[in-house]
Length: 104
Image 1 (cartoon, rainbow, N blue to C red):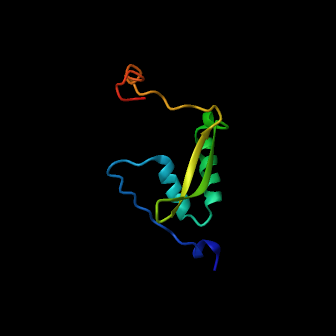
Image 2: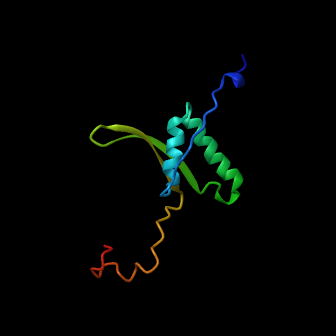
Image 3: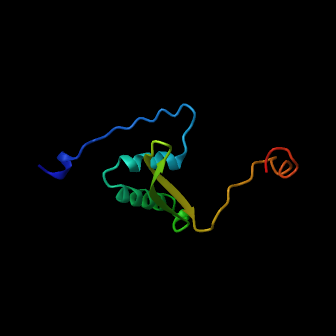
């Protein structure tokens, strides 16, 4: 049998009733993959080819992590900007930073 006929086809359903973070969704797909490194490289290459302006501006890295008392294993994806971008400030939050208004 050829490799194509032997490959399994999988279906994933995400029920994101309250939203989902892109890095977490990517990590779950990588974790379910039989070749996570290859899939991660494919994702990065596809983004760079699809949005040429982003080529060389970011890198994707993954690591195995363990969380919680039961030591649950998972995949964690890091999206790193070569420019060291920081999160944008929340509009209106600058007035409350450091004045005891709650964001410190």
